[in-house]
Length: 275
Ligand SMILES: NC(=O)c1ccc[n+]([C@@H]2O[C@H](COP(=O)([O-])OP(=O)(O)OC[C@H]3O[C@@H](n4cnc5c(N)ncnc54)[C@H](O)[C@@H]3O)[C@@H](O)[C@H]2O)c1
Image (cartoon, rainbow, N blue to C red; front, side, top):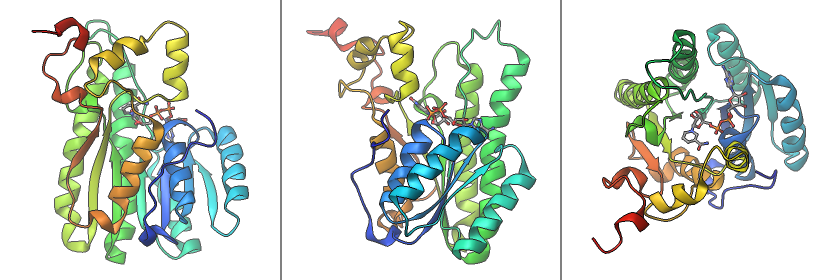
């Protein structure tokens, strides 16, 4: 994924807003951070990989010299560090308008062999990490009387797949958590929605394909729209859900998967042609 990936949509109301993105050093988090910066937002990048984060921050700050672009090396599972990071960002920019809880890990192993430590780590980062960051942001946003929280679930939080027990269960729990927070904080002016990407062509997916561990042709063939998602697709969804354009949407899990999860056949389109 090149450094020039940006989403196409820009919403005027986002200009000047303060947006914090977790897991922002690479992949979808980086793509969303770039899209918010391109839309005129102040952006806080949070990631456990401080070294990669510094380079990302420097490039983004150079491209957007008029905006606050800052980085915080922290784990989403650390309530004190996340509370400090978000509180500091709010103080420096005047508000915290959008919290994107994107950091997550995948864990593929047959359930009979799944190491309990990998299960715990997946739940800790994918679910508890989302709660920790949502809670810290929610405290600021409910006091402000406005804000948007976006949690990253997955197509695999909506439909199942073998050998992904920890991943699917943690992402389905994020979908449920999203609904709870949405109904709890609606009266305080805070909207909470989840992004549920299908397979997205990130650097990681491209490298797995290059190593022969993922068959992109078969994935495209299995997908009704015959394409994988792009990081820009997910960034555009985040911009839409962050903007006042979606003011009446809360508690939803928005799937962007080219129709994968709608297709009950579950086999490649070419295999059923003519039936
Ligand atoms: N890429 C896809 O096809 C896809 C599909 C569906 C859902 N998702 C979800 O989207 C999110 C981003 O995926 P991606 O493909 O960009 O992943 P990625 O591995 O490319 O990036 C994840 C980032 O999160 C950071 N991170 C990991 N643990 C952390 C922690 N404890 N605290 C702070 N940061 C941490 C990593 O350092 C990394 O920079 C994940 O939640 C993933 O489950 C991705």
